[in-house]
Length: 410
Image (cartoon, rainbow, N blue to C red; front, side):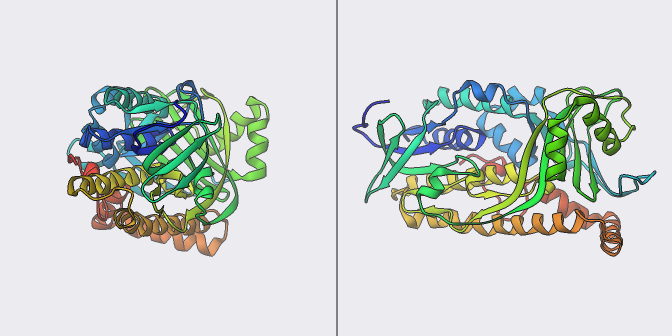
């Protein structure tokens, strides 16, 4: 990096994960004349070592198709063909299924795909570079100053850059959000999420499972081959002990929750543990500054919508910026950024509240609450119209959907 660029960038994105890279690709693809840079504090090879997989909603896959990367990553993805929901205790001999979902939003279009994060980031990085996005890693933003027409960004190595708009996509513990003085509403649950991969003897046939247990949801998400990704919510102390303990004990506890319907199980990836909480930014924008992805919102994984919320931010922000650019309006002005905030803040807060309520409703062992929630699940299962609505929401196609998530070009 130079000490200071003579010509300011149009958009500088702090955060080189799937949110930051998707925004860069969306902007450059729609307007190749935009000067866009993406920087991440982590070295580029860190993403190649990411063993995690995520569920990407149908709307996100439509956006990836617009980017021209879906044909590359689709062979590595696992479509989710259907989903079942159970509610039981660990000691229960039978796990009754209260809710089932078919997996298509349209003929031949599953409502979600499982995909390894590293494969998506690699495809987005190649595409961004091909579009002449400046990709910088490692590069840690140390501070920034907002002036009338530009933002001056200072890096840890003492170098500086100027940009007309700074986007923080640097994660739930966003340093840039704090530097901007944006406050959050947040609290911690006494829960942690265990993420790992297991191999099993029998095929999953593309079925996802969500088992509601007293300590929290236990999600089984299908991967290519006889493998599944687990998102296992447990009380924090128990989760930390399980991850730190020996593999034999972990597999015994895993089998108690997973069951034996897919045959013998074996760990097939590292065990990782993440504390769970809710964090919502009170504001998504400031002059020449915007939040996107986990920097704007961190929610409980019970709905599986956290990363898809981030991609919804991407599609909305890109649409707002490109429309302003075509009208000759300053893309960093509050008039432009307020539209993005109006579009995304309510939707995000609504999802945060929903996930919080669901977690409190299902992560307990109260007999009365259990009866009420099981009746509710049974009612939903018998109402095709309501199930279709929930499928649409899970596919990312509810509400005011940005163009890219509808599969349309900007």
